Image (cartoon, rainbow, N blue to C red; front, side, top):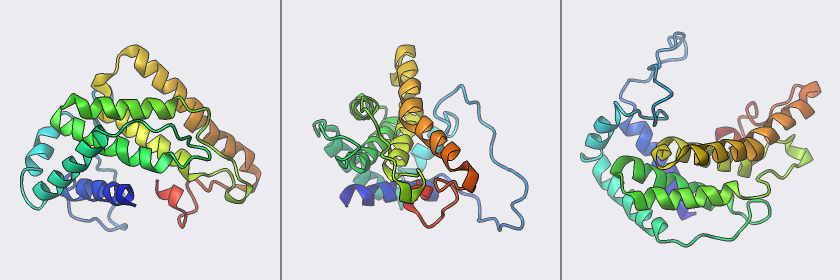
Length: 211
């Protein structure tokens, strides 16, 4: 429960501090006005090397400073936490790992303190070493929350802590993320294609769709 709250707080922190533009109505939002980023340079999810300084400055001012202080407190707790030996499939590993990886990865991206990034890497590598993230079930047409959670957490680590990785690390990450996350997704799409069903994306009442 505590982790879920801080993951929600993490998302809220981004929405409030990174996005300054006013809300645009659906009728007016026809033209894609997203800033083009250089995808060879990381991070580029939520903030870029060019905007990271401004993000850090905002975190020093209220209402963000006190929230950031609380998040760093959680990051300190996570950094000292030993690795779990639980599995994703049948072991409820995905949700706690997601919260830990995202909080620590953000803490590293903003502060540059390697203890945050290294602990996030250890947790990410523990997920990538699992035999499987995906546990197919007929009732959800292949879509599954733990796979979505692990994929999102690993993607944020890869973006925010990329400078901690060498080329061998990046190759391993891509291979395992493809095997554990993307292939099960694509397989489920193919399986249910005749019914034109993609519950990963189209079923908006489900929690994995949001993830």
